Length: 254
Length: 254
DNA sequence: TTCCTGTAATATGTCGGAGTAATTCGGAGA
DNA sequence: TCTCCGAATTACTCCGACATATTACAGGAA
Image 1 (cartoon, rainbow over the protein chains, first blue to last red):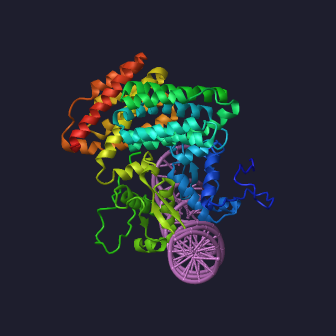
Image 2 (tube, rainbow over the protein chains, first blue to last red; image 1 turned 120 degrees about the horizontal axis):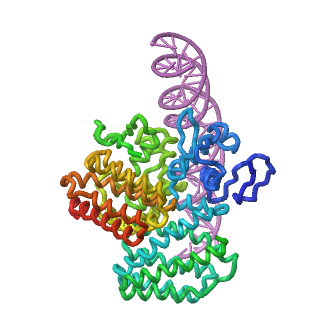
Image 3 (tube, chains in turn blue, brown, yellow, green; image 1 turned 180 degrees about the vertical axis):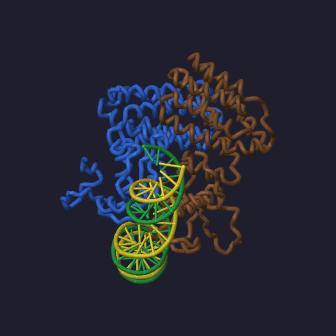
């Protein structure tokens, strides 16, 4: 088994052979353990049905207390990744039980090499949800919503998408649209997917610099929403996500 | 899974002095605490920004050990409901941070009197996602998928929706459709929403007996998927969820 | 007033042990 | 030989006390 400690932290002084857990400044110990186990499960290192070696054995191996290990297991259980029962141990649940839309699970899924099929699924879901969100936004937006969108759009123009500020403005733009839908469930879902999908942006940028100027497409979405044109808003947003899909697909070689 | 509500609310003789936790046979202690706190938060008993009284104080009040309390807090933290920092206590996070699509959070939201607006949001999301799922299913289904749908449909005819067996067949039908989409993310999302929405079925039935025969509408969906007619499948499924929405809305007085 | 620093309050991490539930395996009966 | 049943084993579950780390807050200095 690979003893690789993927980017937890390099500031580990000792050269221990054990897979010791090093926690960063902000990160809590059980959080670090949960991250380690979560990424291991999401990356397929543990298959569904596998049992994580006993509580005491595992805690010993990681050189942490059983309490810390247990709290980490609680987190994984809460996300539907594992289930632990007396005598039987802690087993990895089938994939259908996982809360794949949980932001943290999504982050774990993208921590290593993301599964192409899963990325495709997410884009597909996004292509379903985002245009519908734009349609609702076109129905329900008020002046304040439009002001926020316009502001974000201006910021996107000033800084390009190549800068962190520009990407933040992009997120602001989409958040403003989601906010205008007045639908909490939709908002949470879309934010999760959006964050995960944006994780793939790094791949995109690695492949080649920004493939084209995305501003006009954003403006089209804004105009349609401002005009209250539901069909046009959905159509324009659909084009926007299709664009992102193409770029990412070509960058990932899918 | 159909988990019966162990109803740890009603069977409490004591009045007010101590909010003692009574856990059912299968339920673990920290699970019961998480359920109690989760429903309290979802029902608005704790507003975002409120701090849950100190760890020791709270554990004492509930007459449980700190370990059990802390593990419960880990669960809530994992679902984005709360955040705890040293000295500052455990605070309820703003609603936008909650994982509203988590099955357990959804269950908590529907444990008491469900928020009308939230129910409406969920139905809206369902009306977006399910037709799209049917469209994908029409594209990608194979013979095995169709066989499962047909089987579920037959079971729905035999038992009516008034029986538990009939409702199980209804779930099977929808699950078969989701399965045919070959999209894990979509599947998880739709299953969560579907389960939550079906929770409202009890309200529906309380208002009046089945308002109309839903079988023909299901058959329309099946026929469209079997024929590979994407547009018809989406349209038929849209009609189905609209029907459910109307029934529930009138039953809830919304 | 503003900034800094020290302290107290509170959550986090650790430990070992008792309790409990479920799997497993052996034995009895058919 | 097969099935059923009970007891031992085993691993999770819960507990309470102790040690540590972090940080909000207050009080003093510039």
